[in-house]
Image 1 (tube, rainbow, N blue to C red):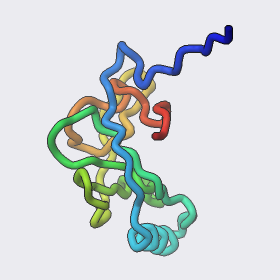
Image 2 (cartoon, helix red, strand yellow):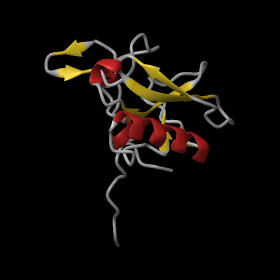
Image 3 (spheres, one colour):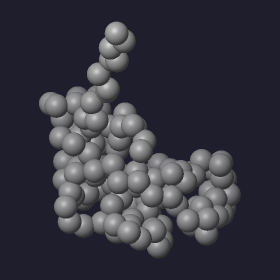
Image 4 (cartoon, rainbow, N blue to C red):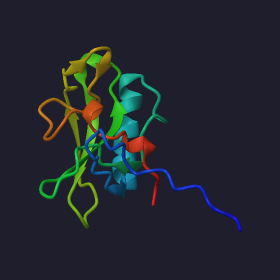
Length: 129
């Protein structure tokens, strides 16, 4: 009898669950992000096209995902926002969240809803469905 190992948990119990909602960045927005990167002298290939909401699990409000860093880190990052059942309709430049805990910075944008990213399960650790 072959016994399978239990599957990896979707979140670490001591941390809050992340939303993790998935969507694709539409081609027109990928092009816009690449154009901005080229204008800034950044690598235009550094654009996220598979998006995952990084906010703490929520039942209301839009989903938010990082798209790319800006060439000057003082300017923040480029983010996409979408509602359930809809594609992201635009990109926005948002300042980085200034929160820190010990040597760990929050990887979200300033004034984000919910907990900081160091208090929620890392969305990159979740299995992609």
